[in-house]
Amino acid sequence: MQYSNRVLNTPSSFIRNILKVTDAPDVISFAGGLPNPISFPLENLQEAINRAIDENGSKIFQYASTNGYLPLRQYIADKYNRKHDLGITADDILLTTGSQQALSLLSQVLINPGDGIIIEEPGYLGAIQAFTMSEPSFYPVTLEEDGLNLEELKVALDQPNVKFIYTVPNFQNPTGLTYTAERRKEVYELIKDRDIILVEDDPYGELRFKGDSLPYIAAGKSENSVLLGSFSKTVTPGMRLGFIISKNKELMRHIETAKQASDLHTNIFSQYAIYEYLTHNEYDTHVQKIIELYDAQSKVMLEALEEHFPENVSFTRPEGGMFVWATLNNGMTAMEFFERAMDVGVAFVPGDPFYTSKKDVNTLRLNYTNSAPEVIRDGIKRLATILKDAEIV
Ligand code: PMP
Figure 1 (cartoon, rainbow, N blue to C red):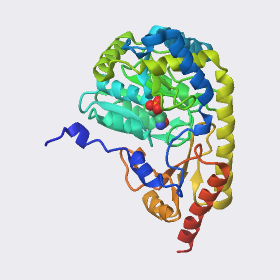
Figure 2 (cartoon, rainbow, N blue to C red; figure 1 turned 60 degrees about the vertical axis):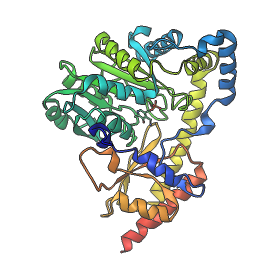
Figure 3 (tube, rainbow, N blue to C red; figure 1 turned 90 degrees about the vertical axis):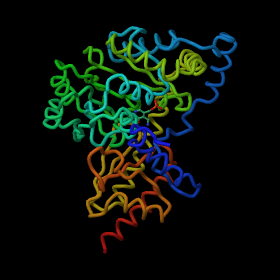
Figure 4 (cartoon, rainbow, N blue to C red; figure 1 turned 120 degrees about the horizontal axis):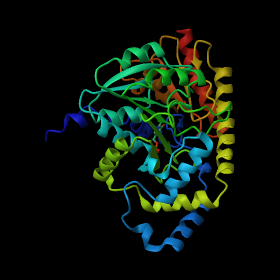
């Protein structure tokens, strides 16, 4: 059988492959990007599901509209208008099967083979994978401490047929970095008059444990803006509920067509259940609990890194979200480190799959949300022994 170039050129998810190895019970895993399951509001979800069935009957098991359950879209519109002053209506929202589907739909709608996508380097692996299916040309732009590198962005913007820029402005996956207010403005100035879409993928924005929430780069301000959200990190990822927000009617119409072709509509049972959950519980209080949990876990990881890692390893200090990004400066690649880490029973994600233009990198992603504090301390200590050995050699 001859398979399509599309799928042959798309790597299977490195992380999912790693998870197969790291699922063993005695391995300490900083590899996955999993929310802590103790944060799932099980009882309240159970009540919400029962209520959804009692109140709506067979409707919640029937086929439904492609753009999604109107009360849920209205709820999301109201929330974003209240918190971010976006000036959107329920019609500017389309519910997707996780925000991952939104990435896939966007590239299907915008990219012909060879068209350009500007992407953060390092960038979210799942986005690289979703976009690769449309056979784009990637124009990577370095993600610095403050956000995208502006000089590189200017050059990338002048490349032929660039259709969109993909950003994760808050607590980025994989680096944990957040664009500063200043850099957001600068990026906006560069893109605002161009016929290029700016995608802001923001599944982590609510999980801020330090500093103040910042305005989006373009959301609410520009026709060319697309904002993505998700309930995966704040309620549950298994329900697969995400959403696209854009005032660009033409783009939204094409996305709706692509979604019809893809799955007709997002799981309607999940949509009703989450709506019932959101409207009958103190969502903000619930999110606050997750923030406190991740704040504590991140502090434990950062303290352990400070205490045990040699000085030549640098790492980010996230203000929210789920990841720390470390850079080895000892001549070792992240893949070499990974192989030795498996010998001491610790897993993380080597940086390689997050780059579209580099190999054999010396960076790696550490997740702190899915391990208890004592496990985090133990895992970082074990990793440190490898780095100390490497220094002696
Ligand atoms: N975007 C980013 C930046 C992510 O980190 C993730 C999840 N790891 C997703 C999108 C996809 O999330 P979901 O499909 O569960 O909403």
